[in-house]
Amino acid sequence: MSEFRYCKFTQEWTLFAPERLKRPIYFTSQHTLRKEEEECPFDRGKEEYTPHEIDRIDQKGEWQCRVVPNLYNALSIDHAPSSSKDYYFEKMSGFGAHEVIVETPHHHKQIWDYDYNEFVNYLTMIQKRLTSLKNDKRLAHLSIFKNQGENAGASLYHSHTQIMALPYISSQLAHLIEYKKAYYQRHKRAFLDDLLYEEQQYDKNIIIENSDFLVFCPYASQHAFQVKIVAKKRLSSLIEFEPNHIASLSDILHEFFKKFHKALGEVSFNMIIKNAPYRDYSSTTKEYYRFYIDIIPRIYKIAGFELDSNIHINVVMPDKAAKTYKEGYE
Ligand SMILES: [Zn+2]
Image (tube, rainbow, N blue to C red; front, side, top):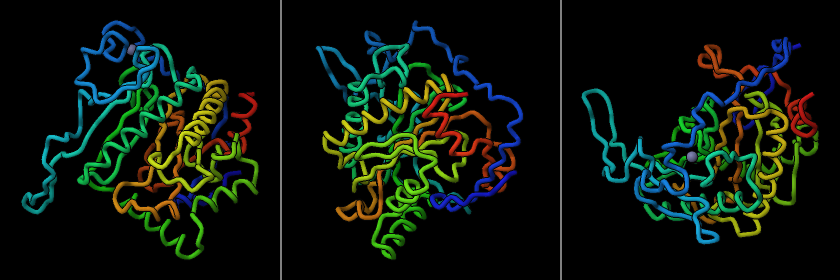
């Protein structure tokens, strides 16, 4: 039987309809992307094919992780931020930054192949970019996301993450921040702290946890096999992470992506790393905002119903998804 579940986070309903899943899932492979190494600009030794390097992490005399501007950038730091009227309409220059983190020098290594140290390098590099770009007071927010596989929007096979630095925050994000602030005013607790407590009490959707992070399939997940990783500690952004927090998150990502690969194979997914925006960031942000990561496998396509109603149809119940991650696909 189908059912609607209310998502407290998005404040939208999700329609669960597992009976629509009449046959086994044949996960779409990401292998339609070209895997050949030749002319890949992200490999070690091909550094000259990327624009000037912004930052890198070296170990054993070689780079392990590096950041370059996106060659096909949608935003540029060279445009002065300016807005103007265009007849009845409003427009703004494409000011911002668009960077690529080349996560590994190895062409065929995917995130589920990374060892602990590679996750530490990856998170440290994101932390460095968040800290550095924060100095530009014109920037309001960083969108940090990984598109893995063609169904997730990736155009290159080599493992990478993108950063888009924006001069404003979307009205949806602004609304979410206001909601979290109001929640804190009312309850003196962070919204996500309470959601973690509720998921822990419910217990059916949890995949793994350690002392600092909880990994679970949210009760009202909009997408099949959707995963949330949330900080249990008072952390609102990677900027605030101490080395022990980076170590702890590396541990849990390392363990999770092994499970992910075992359960779903080389399926396309988006991973979004959610830090508190720069705008209005202060020492009190961590009272109401928690750092989290969303991982959304792109197994089923979004269609007209979702676009019209903003109600997603999910054919996999979250407790079943969590069980699959823990025990492998039956
Ligand atoms: Zn490559």
